[in-house]
Length: 64
Image 1 (tube, rainbow, N blue to C red):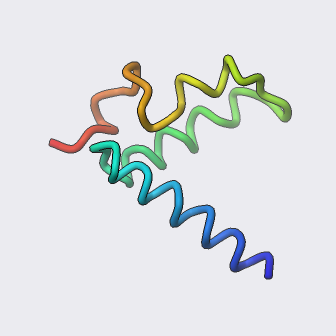
Image 2 (image 1 turned 90 degrees about the vertical axis):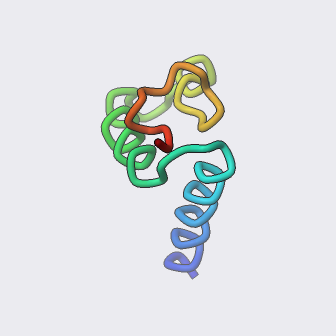
């Protein structure tokens, strides 16, 4: 069941990225680089800039 939950989470992130005009690979790369910097209990304020609809996402996250 844990594998299914992990797969569902990944699929959700990828599809949400696509829906928001992002390159899924670039967005996942961004998340994997930035999330560890936030520590174990990030605040909502820290997470908001990482959301797929955030205007501050780097260009490499966006579809060309």
